Amino acid sequence: MVTEEFRAWMRTATVRQKQAVATAAGTSLSMLYQLASEARHASSELASRIEKASGKKLTRADISETCAECRYYKRCKK
Image (cartoon, rainbow, N blue to C red; front, side, top):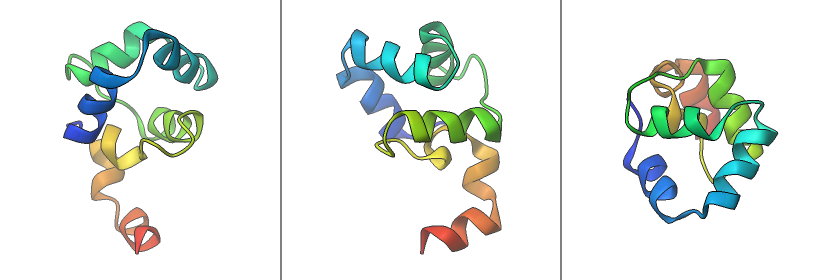
């Protein structure tokens, strides 16, 4: 499960921006597209790396269902 915020970012970000985030997160541009289409699911570790690589424009909860449901993450977001 990815959020509309992640899908919107994927629609509006340039290919260079997406590639920069993917590279900084240690993944591929193809993986970002697969995550957005829900063909693959992100681990909490990958979601955390993407969050950091995006400068927190994306949150780990936007990308990973595990993070979105984590009670500790929810507490930190308050």
